[in-house]
Length: 429
Image (cartoon, rainbow, N blue to C red):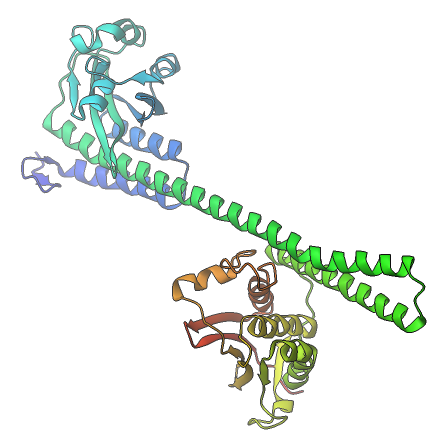
Protein backbone atom coordinates (compact mmCIF):
# COMPACT_ATOMS: atom_id res chain seq x y z
CA UNK A 1 0.00 0.00 0.00
CA UNK A 2 1.28 3.45 -0.85
CA UNK A 3 2.46 5.38 2.17
CA UNK A 4 0.49 8.56 2.90
CA UNK A 5 2.21 11.92 2.62
CA UNK A 6 1.17 15.23 4.20
CA UNK A 7 -0.16 17.90 1.82
CA UNK A 8 -1.34 20.44 4.40
CA UNK A 9 0.07 22.22 7.41
CA UNK A 10 -2.12 20.17 9.76
CA UNK A 11 -0.37 16.83 10.26
CA UNK A 12 -3.77 15.11 10.61
CA UNK A 13 -4.74 16.09 7.07
CA UNK A 14 -3.10 13.41 4.99
CA UNK A 15 -4.01 11.86 1.67
CA UNK A 16 -2.54 9.19 -0.49
CA UNK A 17 0.38 10.23 -2.65
CA UNK A 18 -1.70 9.63 -5.74
CA UNK A 19 -4.33 12.01 -4.35
CA UNK A 20 -1.67 14.68 -3.83
CA UNK A 21 -0.58 14.41 -7.45
CA UNK A 22 -4.16 14.42 -8.74
CA UNK A 23 -5.10 17.35 -6.51
CA UNK A 24 -2.13 19.36 -7.74
CA UNK A 25 -3.13 18.68 -11.35
CA UNK A 26 -6.72 19.78 -10.69
CA UNK A 27 -5.61 22.92 -8.85
CA UNK A 28 -3.28 23.81 -11.70
CA UNK A 29 -6.08 23.39 -14.23
CA UNK A 30 -8.40 25.70 -12.31
CA UNK A 31 -5.69 28.30 -11.68
CA UNK A 32 -5.01 28.38 -15.41
CA UNK A 33 -8.70 29.16 -15.96
CA UNK A 34 -8.49 32.03 -13.48
CA UNK A 35 -5.25 33.36 -14.99
CA UNK A 36 -6.64 33.35 -18.52
CA UNK A 37 -9.76 35.27 -17.53
CA UNK A 38 -12.36 32.51 -17.85
CA UNK A 39 -15.86 33.53 -16.70
CA UNK A 40 -16.57 32.82 -13.04
CA UNK A 41 -19.29 30.30 -13.91
CA UNK A 42 -16.78 28.29 -15.96
CA UNK A 43 -14.15 28.42 -13.22
CA UNK A 44 -16.61 27.27 -10.56
CA UNK A 45 -17.78 24.47 -12.84
CA UNK A 46 -14.12 23.52 -13.18
CA UNK A 47 -13.73 23.42 -9.39
CA UNK A 48 -16.84 21.27 -8.95
CA UNK A 49 -15.79 18.92 -11.75
CA UNK A 50 -12.33 18.62 -10.21
CA UNK A 51 -13.76 17.37 -6.92
CA UNK A 52 -16.11 15.00 -8.73
CA UNK A 53 -13.10 13.44 -10.45
CA UNK A 54 -11.32 13.11 -7.11
CA UNK A 55 -14.45 11.67 -5.42
CA UNK A 56 -16.02 9.27 -7.95
CA UNK A 57 -19.76 8.85 -7.46
CA UNK A 58 -20.24 12.31 -5.98
CA UNK A 59 -22.00 15.36 -7.42
CA UNK A 60 -20.76 18.79 -6.41
CA UNK A 61 -22.21 22.28 -6.47
CA UNK A 62 -21.19 25.85 -5.71
CA UNK A 63 -23.77 28.36 -4.52
CA UNK A 64 -23.01 32.08 -4.24
CA UNK A 65 -24.27 34.15 -1.32
CA UNK A 66 -26.44 37.15 -2.18
CA UNK A 67 -25.87 38.89 1.12
CA UNK A 68 -28.34 41.71 0.53
CA UNK A 69 -31.21 39.32 -0.27
CA UNK A 70 -30.17 36.67 2.24
CA UNK A 71 -30.32 33.89 -0.36
CA UNK A 72 -27.98 31.56 -2.23
CA UNK A 73 -27.68 31.80 -6.01
CA UNK A 74 -26.66 29.10 -8.47
CA UNK A 75 -22.95 29.11 -9.23
CA UNK A 76 -22.13 25.71 -10.72
CA UNK A 77 -23.38 22.12 -10.54
CA UNK A 78 -22.04 20.11 -13.49
CA UNK A 79 -23.80 16.80 -12.76
CA UNK A 80 -26.81 17.68 -10.62
CA UNK A 81 -30.24 17.56 -12.33
CA UNK A 82 -31.36 20.90 -13.75
CA UNK A 83 -34.72 20.42 -12.05
CA UNK A 84 -32.90 20.43 -8.70
CA UNK A 85 -30.49 23.32 -9.32
CA UNK A 86 -33.31 25.51 -10.66
CA UNK A 87 -35.35 25.08 -7.50
CA UNK A 88 -32.34 25.55 -5.22
CA UNK A 89 -31.43 28.84 -6.93
CA UNK A 90 -32.61 31.57 -4.54
CA UNK A 91 -32.55 29.30 -1.47
CA UNK A 92 -32.98 31.39 1.72
CA UNK A 93 -30.26 30.94 4.30
CA UNK A 94 -31.18 29.98 7.86
CA UNK A 95 -30.73 27.46 10.66
CA UNK A 96 -32.97 24.82 9.04
CA UNK A 97 -32.31 25.55 5.39
CA UNK A 98 -30.75 22.29 4.25
CA UNK A 99 -27.01 21.83 4.28
CA UNK A 100 -26.05 24.85 2.15
CA UNK A 101 -28.51 27.36 3.59
CA UNK A 102 -27.53 26.38 7.11
CA UNK A 103 -23.78 26.44 6.37
CA UNK A 104 -24.05 29.93 4.86
CA UNK A 105 -26.08 31.15 7.84
CA UNK A 106 -23.97 29.61 10.62
CA UNK A 107 -20.68 29.96 8.71
CA UNK A 108 -19.85 26.38 9.76
CA UNK A 109 -19.62 23.10 7.81
CA UNK A 110 -22.86 21.12 7.81
CA UNK A 111 -22.99 17.34 7.29
CA UNK A 112 -26.29 15.61 6.49
CA UNK A 113 -25.47 11.90 6.40
CA UNK A 114 -29.05 11.15 5.28
CA UNK A 115 -31.12 14.09 4.04
CA UNK A 116 -34.33 12.06 4.42
CA UNK A 117 -33.91 11.95 8.20
CA UNK A 118 -31.88 15.11 8.91
CA UNK A 119 -34.04 17.80 10.58
CA UNK A 120 -32.35 20.58 8.61
CA UNK A 121 -33.71 19.04 5.40
CA UNK A 122 -37.32 18.70 6.52
CA UNK A 123 -38.58 21.34 4.06
CA UNK A 124 -36.45 19.99 1.19
CA UNK A 125 -36.79 16.21 1.51
CA UNK A 126 -39.16 15.84 -1.42
CA UNK A 127 -36.85 17.97 -3.56
CA UNK A 128 -33.86 15.78 -2.67
CA UNK A 129 -35.82 12.56 -3.16
CA UNK A 130 -37.01 13.67 -6.62
CA UNK A 131 -33.35 14.26 -7.59
CA UNK A 132 -32.23 10.92 -6.14
CA UNK A 133 -30.03 12.53 -3.48
CA UNK A 134 -29.52 11.03 0.00
CA UNK A 135 -26.43 12.67 1.52
CA UNK A 136 -25.12 16.24 1.40
CA UNK A 137 -22.40 18.04 3.27
CA UNK A 138 -21.71 21.71 2.70
CA UNK A 139 -18.69 23.88 3.49
CA UNK A 140 -18.80 27.70 3.69
CA UNK A 141 -16.59 29.40 1.11
CA UNK A 142 -14.72 32.13 2.96
CA UNK A 143 -13.56 35.15 0.98
CA UNK A 144 -11.98 38.51 1.74
CA UNK A 145 -15.24 39.90 3.13
CA UNK A 146 -16.55 36.82 4.92
CA UNK A 147 -18.62 33.94 3.60
CA UNK A 148 -19.19 34.31 -0.15
CA UNK A 149 -20.93 31.00 -0.87
CA UNK A 150 -21.04 27.27 -0.18
CA UNK A 151 -19.38 24.22 -1.66
CA UNK A 152 -21.53 21.08 -1.43
CA UNK A 153 -20.91 17.38 -2.06
CA UNK A 154 -23.89 15.07 -2.71
CA UNK A 155 -24.18 11.28 -2.73
CA UNK A 156 -27.04 9.05 -3.83
CA UNK A 157 -26.73 6.87 -0.72
CA UNK A 158 -26.36 7.86 2.95
CA UNK A 159 -22.72 8.82 3.43
CA UNK A 160 -20.47 10.34 6.07
CA UNK A 161 -17.34 12.14 4.78
CA UNK A 162 -13.97 10.61 5.59
CA UNK A 163 -10.96 12.70 6.69
CA UNK A 164 -9.58 12.31 3.16
CA UNK A 165 -12.79 13.65 1.64
CA UNK A 166 -12.95 16.52 4.12
CA UNK A 167 -9.40 17.51 3.22
CA UNK A 168 -10.12 17.51 -0.52
CA UNK A 169 -13.26 19.60 0.02
CA UNK A 170 -11.28 22.07 2.13
CA UNK A 171 -8.62 22.45 -0.57
CA UNK A 172 -11.10 22.98 -3.40
CA UNK A 173 -13.31 25.26 -1.31
CA UNK A 174 -10.28 27.48 -0.91
CA UNK A 175 -9.76 27.41 -4.67
CA UNK A 176 -13.40 28.43 -5.18
CA UNK A 177 -12.81 31.30 -2.75
CA UNK A 178 -9.83 32.48 -4.80
CA UNK A 179 -11.94 32.41 -7.97
CA UNK A 180 -14.84 34.30 -6.38
CA UNK A 181 -12.58 36.95 -4.85
CA UNK A 182 -10.74 37.36 -8.15
CA UNK A 183 -14.01 37.82 -10.03
CA UNK A 184 -15.17 40.32 -7.42
CA UNK A 185 -11.99 42.36 -7.77
CA UNK A 186 -12.29 42.37 -11.56
CA UNK A 187 -15.92 43.46 -11.31
CA UNK A 188 -15.00 46.26 -8.89
CA UNK A 189 -12.19 47.36 -11.20
CA UNK A 190 -14.55 47.37 -14.19
CA UNK A 191 -17.07 49.46 -12.26
CA UNK A 192 -14.35 51.89 -11.22
CA UNK A 193 -13.07 52.18 -14.79
CA UNK A 194 -16.61 52.66 -16.12
CA UNK A 195 -17.26 55.37 -13.54
CA UNK A 196 -13.96 57.06 -14.40
CA UNK A 197 -14.75 56.84 -18.12
CA UNK A 198 -18.19 58.28 -17.46
CA UNK A 199 -16.73 61.17 -15.49
CA UNK A 200 -14.09 61.79 -18.15
CA UNK A 201 -16.72 61.75 -20.91
CA UNK A 202 -18.88 64.15 -18.92
CA UNK A 203 -15.87 66.42 -18.43
CA UNK A 204 -15.15 66.20 -22.15
CA UNK A 205 -18.70 67.15 -23.12
CA UNK A 206 -18.55 70.11 -20.75
CA UNK A 207 -15.10 71.23 -21.91
CA UNK A 208 -15.88 70.64 -25.58
CA UNK A 209 -19.11 72.65 -25.29
CA UNK A 210 -17.19 75.44 -23.55
CA UNK A 211 -14.49 75.43 -26.21
CA UNK A 212 -17.08 75.49 -29.00
CA UNK A 213 -19.02 78.34 -27.45
CA UNK A 214 -16.29 80.97 -27.91
CA UNK A 215 -15.60 80.39 -31.64
CA UNK A 216 -19.31 79.95 -32.36
CA UNK A 217 -20.06 83.24 -30.63
CA UNK A 218 -17.34 84.87 -32.72
CA UNK A 219 -18.79 83.45 -35.92
CA UNK A 220 -22.30 84.55 -34.95
CA UNK A 221 -21.19 88.01 -33.85
CA UNK A 222 -19.11 88.82 -36.90
CA UNK A 223 -21.76 87.40 -39.23
CA UNK A 224 -24.40 89.67 -37.66
CA UNK A 225 -21.97 92.58 -37.89
CA UNK A 226 -21.49 91.99 -41.61
CA UNK A 227 -25.22 91.68 -42.31
CA UNK A 228 -26.40 94.66 -40.22
CA UNK A 229 -23.68 97.23 -40.90
CA UNK A 230 -22.31 98.69 -44.10
CA UNK A 231 -18.64 97.83 -43.56
CA UNK A 232 -15.82 99.09 -45.69
CA UNK A 233 -13.58 96.56 -47.43
CA UNK A 234 -10.92 96.58 -44.70
CA UNK A 235 -13.36 95.97 -41.84
CA UNK A 236 -15.21 93.34 -43.87
CA UNK A 237 -11.93 91.52 -44.53
CA UNK A 238 -11.07 91.67 -40.82
CA UNK A 239 -14.47 90.23 -39.88
CA UNK A 240 -14.06 87.44 -42.42
CA UNK A 241 -10.64 86.71 -40.96
CA UNK A 242 -12.09 86.34 -37.46
CA UNK A 243 -14.83 84.05 -38.81
CA UNK A 244 -12.27 81.91 -40.63
CA UNK A 245 -10.07 81.67 -37.51
CA UNK A 246 -13.02 80.63 -35.35
CA UNK A 247 -14.12 78.02 -37.88
CA UNK A 248 -10.56 76.73 -38.08
CA UNK A 249 -10.45 76.30 -34.29
CA UNK A 250 -13.64 74.23 -34.38
CA UNK A 251 -12.27 72.07 -37.19
CA UNK A 252 -9.00 71.59 -35.30
CA UNK A 253 -10.85 70.29 -32.23
CA UNK A 254 -12.93 67.96 -34.39
CA UNK A 255 -9.76 66.67 -36.07
CA UNK A 256 -8.20 65.93 -32.67
CA UNK A 257 -11.23 63.89 -31.60
CA UNK A 258 -11.17 61.97 -34.89
CA UNK A 259 -7.43 61.34 -34.59
CA UNK A 260 -7.86 59.85 -31.11
CA UNK A 261 -10.53 57.55 -32.53
CA UNK A 262 -8.29 56.53 -35.44
CA UNK A 263 -5.38 55.79 -33.10
CA UNK A 264 -7.54 53.62 -30.86
CA UNK A 265 -8.83 51.78 -33.95
CA UNK A 266 -5.26 51.46 -35.33
CA UNK A 267 -6.44 53.16 -38.49
CA UNK A 268 -4.21 56.25 -38.52
CA UNK A 269 -2.60 56.86 -41.94
CA UNK A 270 1.13 57.62 -41.71
CA UNK A 271 3.90 58.43 -44.16
CA UNK A 272 7.16 57.66 -42.37
CA UNK A 273 10.24 59.29 -43.87
CA UNK A 274 13.69 60.39 -42.71
CA UNK A 275 13.24 64.14 -42.26
CA UNK A 276 15.38 66.95 -40.80
CA UNK A 277 14.41 67.79 -37.23
CA UNK A 278 15.38 71.46 -37.05
CA UNK A 279 12.91 72.79 -39.67
CA UNK A 280 10.05 71.04 -37.87
CA UNK A 281 11.02 72.63 -34.54
CA UNK A 282 11.48 76.06 -36.12
CA UNK A 283 8.10 75.82 -37.85
CA UNK A 284 6.28 74.93 -34.64
CA UNK A 285 7.97 77.71 -32.65
CA UNK A 286 7.00 80.20 -35.35
CA UNK A 287 3.37 79.05 -35.14
CA UNK A 288 3.15 79.37 -31.36
CA UNK A 289 5.21 82.56 -31.09
CA UNK A 290 2.18 84.89 -31.02
CA UNK A 291 0.50 82.78 -28.32
CA UNK A 292 3.68 82.80 -26.21
CA UNK A 293 3.98 86.57 -26.57
CA UNK A 294 0.35 87.05 -25.56
CA UNK A 295 0.84 84.86 -22.47
CA UNK A 296 4.15 86.47 -21.52
CA UNK A 297 6.03 83.17 -21.87
CA UNK A 298 9.52 83.00 -23.38
CA UNK A 299 10.42 80.29 -25.91
CA UNK A 300 13.93 78.85 -25.95
CA UNK A 301 15.49 76.49 -28.48
CA UNK A 302 19.09 75.73 -29.57
CA UNK A 303 20.45 78.23 -32.12
CA UNK A 304 20.47 76.85 -35.68
CA UNK A 305 23.14 74.20 -36.20
CA UNK A 306 24.57 74.67 -32.69
CA UNK A 307 24.37 71.01 -31.67
CA UNK A 308 26.80 68.24 -32.49
CA UNK A 309 26.19 66.92 -35.05
CA UNK A 310 24.62 70.09 -36.45
CA UNK A 311 20.83 70.16 -35.95
CA UNK A 312 20.24 70.48 -39.67
CA UNK A 313 21.94 67.12 -40.12
CA UNK A 314 19.82 65.33 -37.51
CA UNK A 315 17.22 63.18 -39.21
CA UNK A 316 14.26 61.64 -37.46
CA UNK A 317 12.11 58.79 -38.77
CA UNK A 318 8.59 60.20 -38.59
CA UNK A 319 5.52 61.45 -40.40
CA UNK A 320 6.19 65.18 -40.82
CA UNK A 321 2.59 66.26 -40.32
CA UNK A 322 2.15 64.09 -37.23
CA UNK A 323 5.50 65.08 -35.70
CA UNK A 324 4.52 68.71 -36.15
CA UNK A 325 1.19 67.94 -34.50
CA UNK A 326 2.90 66.27 -31.53
CA UNK A 327 5.36 69.10 -30.98
CA UNK A 328 2.66 71.73 -31.46
CA UNK A 329 0.51 70.07 -28.79
CA UNK A 330 3.40 69.81 -26.34
CA UNK A 331 4.65 73.37 -26.75
CA UNK A 332 1.12 74.79 -26.66
CA UNK A 333 0.44 72.88 -23.44
CA UNK A 334 3.68 74.20 -21.98
CA UNK A 335 2.70 77.78 -22.80
CA UNK A 336 -0.86 77.34 -21.56
CA UNK A 337 0.17 76.03 -18.14
CA UNK A 338 3.15 78.34 -17.55
CA UNK A 339 2.64 81.63 -15.75
CA UNK A 340 3.59 84.95 -17.31
CA UNK A 341 7.32 85.48 -16.96
CA UNK A 342 8.01 81.75 -17.29
CA UNK A 343 9.57 79.88 -20.19
CA UNK A 344 9.21 76.83 -22.41
CA UNK A 345 12.43 75.16 -23.59
CA UNK A 346 12.72 72.86 -26.61
CA UNK A 347 15.91 70.84 -27.08
CA UNK A 348 17.04 67.41 -28.22
CA UNK A 349 19.74 64.79 -27.87
CA UNK A 350 20.80 62.17 -30.37
CA UNK A 351 22.47 58.77 -30.25
CA UNK A 352 23.04 56.13 -32.91
CA UNK A 353 19.49 54.81 -32.77
CA UNK A 354 17.23 57.48 -31.32
CA UNK A 355 16.33 61.15 -31.21
CA UNK A 356 15.03 62.46 -27.88
CA UNK A 357 13.07 65.68 -28.18
CA UNK A 358 12.32 67.46 -24.90
CA UNK A 359 9.77 70.16 -24.13
CA UNK A 360 10.36 71.66 -20.68
CA UNK A 361 8.24 74.32 -19.01
CA UNK A 362 8.61 76.30 -15.80
CA UNK A 363 4.97 75.92 -14.85
CA UNK A 364 3.55 74.84 -11.48
CA UNK A 365 4.28 71.16 -12.10
CA UNK A 366 2.08 68.14 -11.41
CA UNK A 367 1.96 65.80 -8.44
CA UNK A 368 3.39 62.38 -9.27
CA UNK A 369 0.14 60.63 -8.34
CA UNK A 370 -1.65 62.54 -11.11
CA UNK A 371 0.83 61.88 -13.93
CA UNK A 372 -0.91 58.75 -15.24
CA UNK A 373 -4.15 60.70 -15.64
CA UNK A 374 -2.49 63.02 -18.14
CA UNK A 375 -2.89 60.30 -20.76
CA UNK A 376 -6.59 59.68 -20.15
CA UNK A 377 -8.56 61.30 -23.00
CA UNK A 378 -10.73 64.21 -21.82
CA UNK A 379 -9.29 64.15 -18.26
CA UNK A 380 -8.01 67.66 -17.56
CA UNK A 381 -7.07 67.15 -13.88
CA UNK A 382 -9.76 69.57 -12.86
CA UNK A 383 -8.30 72.49 -14.82
CA UNK A 384 -11.49 74.32 -15.56
CA UNK A 385 -10.31 77.59 -17.08
CA UNK A 386 -7.12 76.87 -18.99
CA UNK A 387 -8.69 75.94 -22.33
CA UNK A 388 -8.46 72.67 -24.19
CA UNK A 389 -10.56 69.55 -23.92
CA UNK A 390 -7.99 67.17 -22.46
CA UNK A 391 -6.82 65.59 -25.72
CA UNK A 392 -3.37 67.13 -26.19
CA UNK A 393 -1.18 64.65 -24.31
CA UNK A 394 -3.22 61.50 -25.09
CA UNK A 395 -3.12 62.45 -28.75
CA UNK A 396 0.60 63.28 -28.66
CA UNK A 397 1.43 59.94 -27.06
CA UNK A 398 -0.82 58.03 -29.44
CA UNK A 399 0.79 59.69 -32.46
CA UNK A 400 4.29 59.10 -31.08
CA UNK A 401 3.63 55.41 -30.46
CA UNK A 402 2.10 55.06 -33.92
CA UNK A 403 5.47 56.27 -35.27
CA UNK A 404 7.33 53.55 -33.28
CA UNK A 405 8.33 55.97 -30.53
CA UNK A 406 7.44 56.65 -26.93
CA UNK A 407 6.40 59.69 -24.93
CA UNK A 408 7.18 60.16 -21.23
CA UNK A 409 6.35 62.85 -18.69
CA UNK A 410 8.24 63.87 -15.57
CA UNK A 411 7.26 66.70 -13.28
CA UNK A 412 8.06 68.32 -9.94
CA UNK A 413 5.59 70.54 -8.15
CA UNK A 414 6.88 74.11 -8.19
CA UNK A 415 9.56 73.40 -10.80
CA UNK A 416 7.72 72.49 -14.00
CA UNK A 417 7.09 69.61 -16.35
CA UNK A 418 9.22 67.87 -18.97
CA UNK A 419 7.79 65.81 -21.82
CA UNK A 420 10.29 63.64 -23.69
CA UNK A 421 9.43 62.28 -27.11
CA UNK A 422 11.75 59.51 -28.32
CA UNK A 423 11.66 58.51 -31.99
CA UNK A 424 13.88 56.40 -34.26
CA UNK A 425 16.76 58.31 -35.77
CA UNK A 426 16.64 58.72 -39.53
CA UNK A 427 19.48 57.65 -41.80
CA UNK A 428 21.37 59.86 -44.19
CA UNK A 429 21.06 58.52 -47.75
